[in-house]
Figure 1 (cartoon, rainbow, N blue to C red):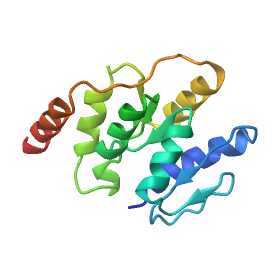
Figure 2 (figure 1 turned 120 degrees about the vertical axis):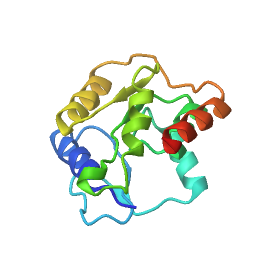
Figure 3 (figure 1 turned 60 degrees about the vertical axis):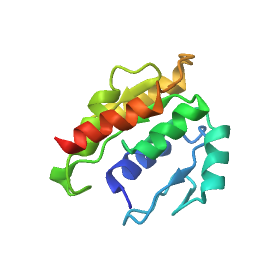
Figure 4 (figure 1 turned 180 degrees about the vertical axis):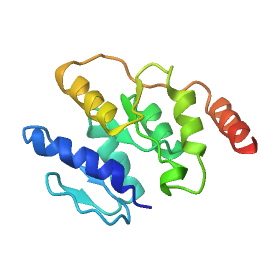
Length: 149
């Protein structure tokens, strides 16, 4: 599933920072990046290899990517999809992002400007903080609780 608002925001930032090496999985969105290399989809093995090599991850608030970041010990910038913008069927990603806000190694960007600021922060400093999930069972239980509500 594409997420054009995220891809456009990161692509705009990449255009201002051509010295930064980025790689993007864009899904089936309509927007085509101009300033960064991309693929529509990665195989699970290719995705895991990219996660292992990267310095940090920028993603929607999907549990798969959140768990991949935790497993790899990578800092994470979360930019949730919004139901009111028809990026998803409901606002479950907003709930996930809110839950993630106080986690070490995670920055939640609620707006395009906050996303650019988070990218700048990762560019100009190495916080040394990575996201490491607690028990995956607890994460699944929490997300299930949000969905049930």
